[in-house]
Length: 70
Image (tube, rainbow, N blue to C red; front, side, top):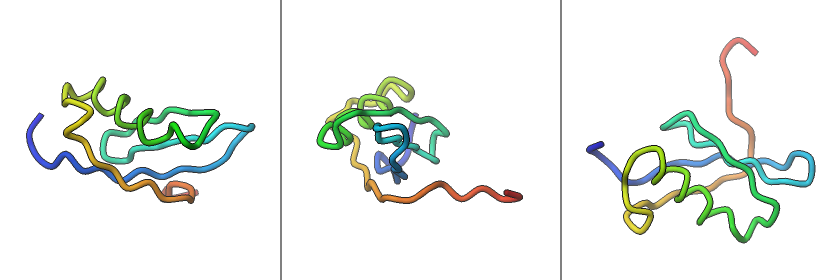
């Protein structure tokens, strides 16, 4: 995969977990401890793209992903 190694991440609380959604790759994961969110999302992106986790930067913001038609 070529291009930017920076990803936007949307996070929200659900069922005592933090859901992390990466719109750029249409993938999500959850964590129980918000302190592990950045490592978890980097691992997810790395697994799905083949990038090295250390090369990935991300901005995590609280909210819910916007969906048209909902």
